[in-house]
Amino acid sequence: MANPHCPQEAEIIARQQESATIVTLTLRLTDAQAAGRFRFTPGQFNMLYLPEVGEIPISIASDADTPAELAHTIRAVGRVSQGLARLDVGDRIGLRGPYGRGWPLDAARGHNIIIITGGLGCAPVVPVIHHIHRRREDYGQLAILHGVKHCSDLIWDDCYEHWSLHPDTQVLLAADVCDIQWPGTIGPVTHLLDQLTLDRTDAIALLCGPEPMLRACAEQLLGSGMRAEQIWLSLERNMQCALGQCGHCQLGEHFLCRDGPVFNYAQVRHLLDKPQL
Image (cartoon, rainbow, N blue to C red; front, top):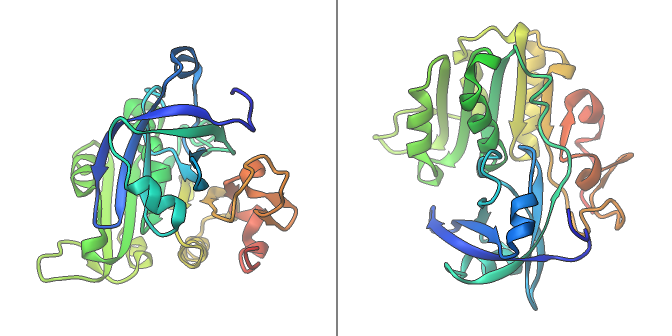
């Protein structure tokens, strides 16, 4: 990593409008040497800087095996994210990263994998899915569970269909509100857990999404016989420096930008009701 305090210039090389409020920007560092050195672990994030506007943390949603092209899926909800969502191919922004601790993929080798996401939470685990499919013999069965509030909120439906065609892979979708053409389950993502066909006792669960959903899913997994040490969460807080120095993302004794954003459930179960700063 270059100077962690100083953004490097990155150019938008692709733009995909996923929905009315969600866009995926694919970036490449303009410094060829820096681009060649850049590496990240699935689950890490970058800080994206829009000059004269501000900086926000965004998960890396692309394949870690092709780190020269960095995809970031952004929901336009605040000043910086709205500004980023208006950019187009050829525009340039600042990028710092990668930061944080990623998913425990080495420890998960040889185990079944359960991936549970909600809303836009799928972005941090897309690199995990790529990683597993490229190394299929290293892992057991894979289950991908995703829930949205409304069926129209679902993005990457082609990806879910593609993933479902892979061997030993189960894909389950849920929506709280849906139309008559919705092929998935009606209700919260927790309703999908009863449909799992893989053995949970030999599984590692990776969860990402709104914290109430994380807690509900984790507790239901515990109730089905899994241990807290088998469950991993990607948490969100108000990250500003990404270096564990400003304190805005502190959760108990942890700084999410430095010690996370991925945590074992046993580490943070007692902290999830703590308010954000």
